[in-house]
View 1: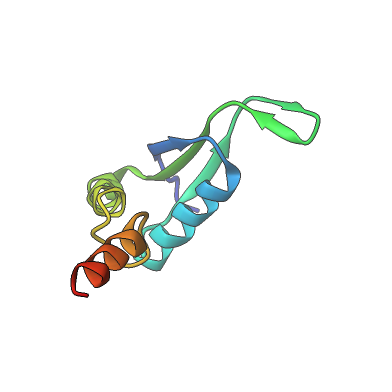
View 2 (view 1 turned 120 degrees about the horizontal axis):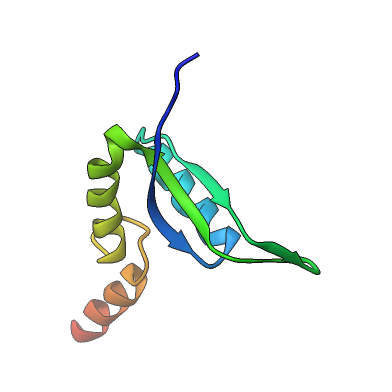
Length: 91
């Protein structure tokens, strides 16, 4: 069994967002795990949710994350808005 040393890529505030990012990283063949600290408050977890990748893949994961946050990847935030603006400008 190999010991993987995890590095935090990003902290997010919702479990849903964490799952989306994790799945997208894994689709790029970048292993990812979600680590969730904090305390339970009724049905909600209070505290940061970390998306972590193996230390040796952190550079690649950061490059992917930068593209995702800047809307340079298919399905990234803001992509639909940019498409709608360009279609309206063409009218």
